[in-house]
Image 1 (tube, rainbow, N blue to C red):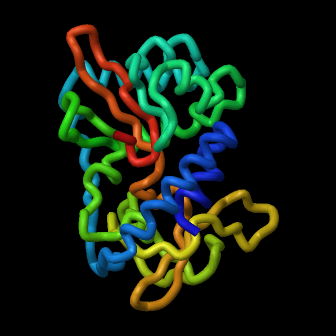
Image 2 (image 1 turned 120 degrees about the vertical axis):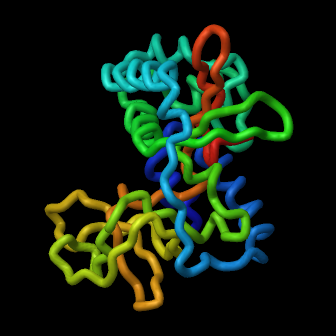
Image 3 (image 1 turned 90 degrees about the vertical axis):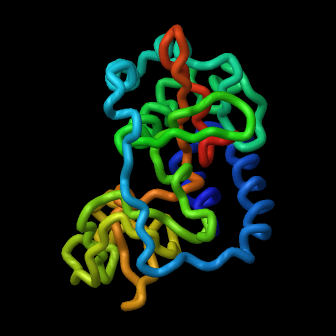
Length: 244
């Protein structure tokens, strides 16, 4: 199964309708991408944070993260662009965003998903139409075009330990730093029934291995995009791969 139908379904459970749309989107494009080369060996995607030196961004990012930590729905709704994107095929706008992310619920997955995206740093991207956007994490907008996005993942940590089994006490197969790898399974339970750690099974030249889910990111996972305007930063999208 693709990340959109496994990891995406687990980590972005904001509505059944939204999940169906994302899964259909992934299925439709998986066939088109099947002709692309498989994940290249020894390919890396180094981390970037191109807005880190912009004081307005660092200040805004801190306020946004603080608001998310407080689950401040009013603040989040207040920084949304009126045409904000929230899904691959869903309509645009604040009302749709509110529905897709189930913001009226105290258990909205936005409170976990948005910080996970923002903590990894981001990069600027310019679409054919529209303004320059800053999108985080950098994985989706910097993903190599000749690597199948539905079969790969980027290690987002330095010296991540690849284990021979889904357990922290298993032997270490390899050590990776920001490598792009082929993913075989996005959601593997820990060998210990008492552990809540999730693992991702990957393929290396040495064989199959496992990395903690927080140390690898798919380019089609949710990406938050923002535009800087005269009135400050606005969120223009939080959708699979950033949306368009």
